Length: 334
Image (cartoon, rainbow, N blue to C red; front, side, top):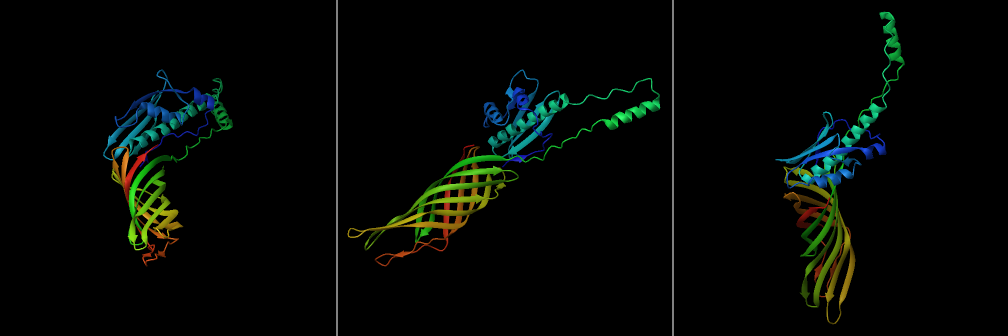
């Protein structure tokens, strides 16, 4: 969960492409061994800036990452004649901190170029009044020069609207009561896109396969299976310390269900669509700096029901509300 500190001197990015490509900077990088290294930081910086890393450059980017009780905290400072453009980033994962520092380093370099460009194109100061004029005439001449000179407009930097995007893949095992009185056991794989602005939200899409344990009846063996795509939209994650987080997410499912009765004399198979709407509560616990364990419970309402009666009189009915439960792991990929 990324928290951005105070931003100083955000650039309006009016420097030319040639000036940006000619900018050179040194990098001073320090971080715990469990964090991304300096080469990873340089690669992330190259995504946002055309600055060239040069050990003999006149300016220095100083990057410092530390670990505290809430996760990780990073600080970037641009060193010229004096320290300027200081920014801070705090997050649970060190990867998120380094990503934020790379983005703000590019902003600081653009601000530095903007200041150099403004100084190079600044109009010359008006000449002093001739010393031979009386004091009164000198003051009048000075006021005339000042009033005729164009006033330089000072552009206020825009408020920070930085957005950090992350992606992850997940694997889960679960069970649901979606087939009469029996449980459907399943497994799935999912991809998730997270967006961190003022708070973290995410969108997850998962492909799942499930089946009910076959049951033998008088007329044969009844088997049931289903495949479905599940989409969860989580508008806001709430963090509990640096380890736990949770979210309540609206959920939608679309897929197919298949019921088959295997019989030597006469076999029958039916395939019907599955559509449901509901919600799921998701809980995560960080396991180290990369892997997160996740458990979820949900409740969905079938829009398309699948009810039938076997030849032997066995009632097979879809519940009005289907409880679900899953447990798995989440791995970040960027």
